[in-house]
Length: 257
Figure 1: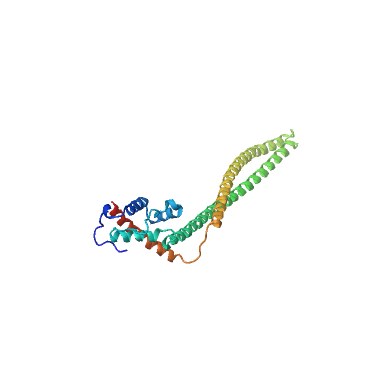
Figure 2: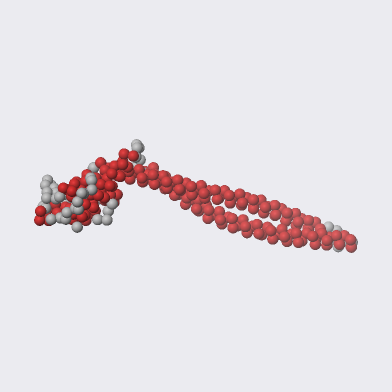
């Protein structure tokens, strides 16, 4: 519909059928603050009593209404009446968009799941290395304990000759600090492993949440409607209808102001 060549006249209620005036006022009120998309959503969501055109008088609709306004009202009816081509195209378009959004959400959820899984794998490698270090430290500590026991139970450690005693004291002087260091290192590694275990518990909790999110989106996607075919036809219909809506609604508002 081409833009009006002159300013839109104002309503002269005395020249228009009261039923038509009531219809147009109701229509303007119903469209207040709405774009084409919101108007379509309302048409899909509402029942008969919420229909935009429920007060449409028959058969003498728009008698006495200027042609430019009558054309605008007819355009609104053509693109928003339930069952019309534009409204059906909008419905199909929204079905495809909702499915596309779910597919994007699934991709994001899968990426998050893989990210958490990668973190767990990386941390497990560190945990495995720490555990190996701890086991090696424990073996080294036990070896030192065995060496100390051997020194203590040897004739020198039991009070043998002077030279033997000196050698035993020298061995213990070397072994005991090393044992203390091994014990301290073992404790540090054990604390580190305990912290890693707590971290694993948190990460596995996040992993379960991520898995549940993926499964929920997969279920929603499986239940969602799917439409095949080319989007372009419906997209063009919706674009054209949007332009007609904006222009026609503006004319009607000016007429009823």
